[in-house]
Length: 478
Image (cartoon, rainbow, N blue to C red):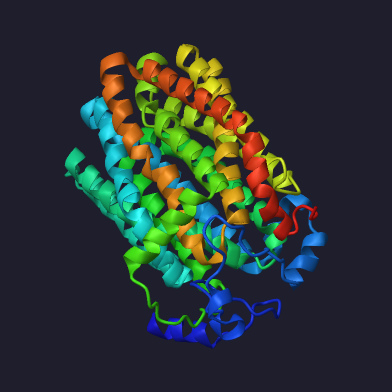
């Protein structure tokens, strides 16, 4: 392992002959002087994102628009490896929910397990974002993927030996939550380093979402078959094996770690700087607040899906797999729509519409008692949720100051995944008292209200973001 890190440092060009780097904060002081290196004041637009001229840029023009990010070798490797791994991840998610429900029959404990798996992200993401800006992001991803593989392997062994309990599942969920607190912001920030041409960044983010949700189609279907045929243990084992694909893709990349200077500020000071930057930027603050609302009130419907499949639709693991697959189909459709877009212009309006679509879809789904009607509505729900979350990611990656990218993406992780445990816990409590479908309906109403609020803010948001788009060359200067 140590020799591999040394060999990575000796590499100084990418496969297309263009110098690249793999992470950390670039020390620009030697070139620009201390005043410029400090970056713009909080709330001011970041420096323009000028796309470098690379071989990837030329290749992008000869590639279908919807796939142009795949012309970059490192991103192509990551896309293939991560796709395989995410299929395993979705298999484990479905198997974990079904295992908990089989052991306990409790909708409340489904919420508790979801809470424990995601609360570390809420607690640790701000600090993790600082370290993502300081450390080599590529190296962080290698470590987190190996640890995730070991976590799935431990869960598989517990099931195979018939010793698994809900306490074991909760403990391992907490471990995975700690891993995700570092893995998710590192992975989000690393995308910009795999795609040399910034013009292809929105497409890469959309393809990431297609990858995540394409695996959501395949994974639950496989999980339903495996659970019915051989039990949950083999689901966890398949997931552990699937991590080898993404680990291999990370080792195959050709990257140069940046020689970073030792930070002179304290971690807590950098964390405070990140918080102030987010709080003072109206566009960033607004999209993160909307995302937090959707994740807290709407996203927990997935936690309650086993109870809905069993109690409302009178099905089993195959029904659960079908419902999760339907959500994935809608999400892939939404991701393909975003991948086909040429620009970030218009995404603010798209986010408002997508949030409303998601909320209304959940309300209608809560009233459905027919399997195929539920499947159709979940496609609508999946599309709305995917477009809202991926658009948020795209906008943040476009307007964020580079020196704060890791910290801002950590706040994105906290809003997206970190608030979900609170929602899961609330959903579990409400489902135990009011029923799963009523809980889903209330979440859908809250998301619909959030979508209407965001739509009323669009004129203000456009006014604040226009100078940033002009500096980035996305809009012509007035």
